[in-house]
Image (cartoon, rainbow, N blue to C red):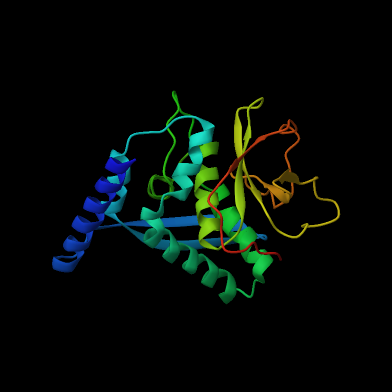
Length: 225
């Protein structure tokens, strides 16, 4: 809508003006998680202004609207440095591209699950700062991080099980992986955002219904292993 575009322009102008004339307040967060039989840790800083901005936005409810939370471009400059840091962490540890991808998945899976009394979807920056969320929150976050990495991803809405997950377009992880989901002639493999230990292509037994696929904005190209 036109008014949303106007508000976005005003926000970005004010934010840019502030950072030109003063030091933006920051929120520093410490993350600790497990992957490949070892502990990983990382400290990262986020802009307080960006976080407060997303906290004030109205919530758009319903699984079909969750793509808007992923596609919102205004947090790109907050998410990309985090992705860069996670990729450097994997590279410094000698991980290959596939292992680094699963390292980032494990990072999201480690965020504590929050039981909500009512539906309250979070933007990626909110989940990162608050370090909690339910399945749609971590699915939105994981999809946003993978989109920053230029992966082709979709959201998977399991209505029968009341669960949200992700589909990622990659080469088949292994011959034993679960069958992919097909959308517009493309195949996507399951990615579990909430439970620690699940790798790409592994589907928990309790999520065996046919999900509704929620497409995101297109990316330049998909990536394989």
